[in-house]
Amino acid sequence: MHDGSQSDAQYSLPSSYASSEGLVESVAESDPLSQTEVCVHEIELIIDTLYRLSTSIRKPSSRRQNTKAAMYRIKDEEGNDCDAAFLEYALRRVQHLFPGVGENLAHRLADTIRLRRRMFLYRQQHQVKLQYRPPVDVLKEEKVGRRPVASTIARTRPQGSRGPLIAFPPSITSASALSRAIHLPSAIGAQSVISRTVAPESSYDIPMQVPRPPRASPGSKEVECPYCCLIMPIKETKQAEWR
Amino acid sequence: MEDEKISTKAKKVIELFFALFDLAPAAGQDSVPGLVEFDDQLGRFKIWGANIGVFAEQHASLDYRLRGDHEATVLMKSLLDGLQRNVRQGM
Image (cartoon, rainbow over all chains, first blue to last red; front, side):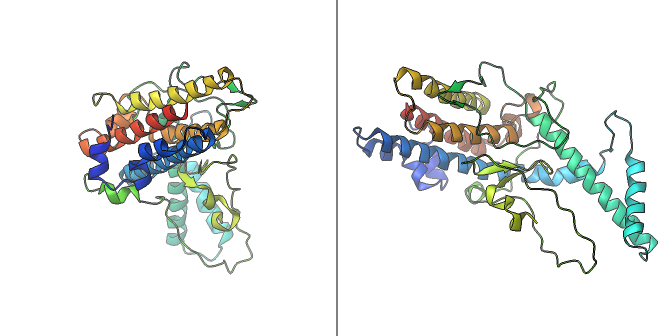
């Protein structure tokens, strides 16, 4: 019955998870609402733990993504290679915004802009590969009461990328192995892998264009960023945090 | 039971959620207490599954990613078993 009991003893899982069964059973059966609340709360905690564990699992692949993204070629909607053209555009953009910039610095900035674009596009493509849609009998969309079952999925899509999820043929991507150096008990408590930095306000009169944060469904705790394809807590989509 | 893949256990979690939702009309109630909350958690679980590649094929799957790491596999499976238990208890 306690399939995870050994793991519970070995790793410091949240105490509420370890004692979930006893807690649920202790609630009076004459109070089904409380029992349901307890079940939902336990499910929420377990899914929180799954998210944190997944954050640590994806850490090595996040680092490798930058290496892979560096070799990614930017292509237009028709599949034509426009990587060099984008680099030229980025270079001209930098030189236009900063007329007095040195040539070496301008090239470095243009290379960085191209690399960032490669990273975004690579992550988008990689995320589509991961979003394999199981057979319909598993993920059937049903209406329950007045609400569709899958209405609370806090998922957004990049602009221009509409349509249903598509199934990629197998073996088109290879998941990186879990790093043996990860200490799982501490990994469960790991927060988001999204790196942060604080930049001073620009002294130039150039307003910085920041894309709008993704919208999350009511009640959801996480949202997938449509720009970097990383899962982030809802609080990071608030305006102050987002900028 | 321990031979089950992570993807199989995750699939069972989703099946149990849908079984729970199927019970709602049979209960003769317009709205089962907590059904909306279960729906929310199912949505979170599906996002997690899609992001980590639980149902991805072959080398893209979470099972393949955790290859060779027994501890992480056991931990992941135990969490999914816990989810199954709690969804069953919600019925």
